[in-house]
Image (tube, rainbow over all chains, first blue to last red; front, side):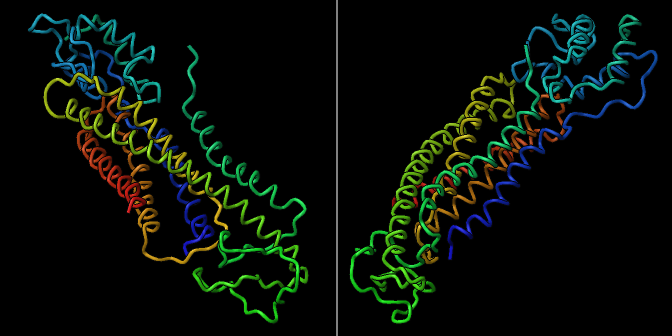
Length: 130
Length: 249
């Protein structure tokens, strides 16, 4: 008999599993892991660009995607097409990362890790070398 | 601006989902137990087919009438419910009143379920169409404006909420009498609804993972996840369509 008891017996564990799945999703880390060590004198091509590729370039590349501004790109140090590039935007995007405004999922704990931020600060201290 | 911790929000949703049915059940069981002795719901007698259970006069006892509790519902029913407790008139009236009350509650909940279900179906259709446009925009080549992201997000939040409410109303509809299991539109509806529920859970989890991965800038596997999410979305919509149309035939 497909009765109320039977329905209840199977539906409640199912409902609990559903809620548990939905609750488990936010607790997962879905961004890239933090870098292992912090270079003392990072450069754009060797150190910064891979970090940006992990956290920023899905949207802030060329062409910009997912509604990102088209006025700048972060995949190059200086832009050949007249757009503002990583060197010109460095101060702004580092501040944005520090504030937790970028990447958008920094709100959920998926932003740039402490080592990554420290490396960006070292890069800024050295005046953003290529 | 005050930010709400998503974990707190999730906890509130969990508590609401788990306790809402308990509260509704408590509400529905309160009048039935007030001054009425606890009786077992008759197994085989539908409320509509129980004529004059409170009639005065001699009522057959349990000894003279065969028990029907193990038989399925159908035309082979007995007018006077056998009663071993010794007060057949009062008990029968109480049972009749209980069945009648439960039937009314069931009708109201299932009508609400039907209305919510059709609304959910419409929202799901819109979610799938906008979601497909979103997929084409973000992963179909080209720059990807992202202009469908927010409409898709709002639609899926609405659809998920409506779907949950629809399911809760169905699960909480009381069943005053048992029905035999057979392959009919009801069974098709249930199977399709279970499929749609599984699809919705997969959609919520996978959609959330895809969006979060994209928001963190992490490009690895994102297109595959979006493609699976897209396919499951349409499949879920198909299950909902089957569940809805099952009642028309």
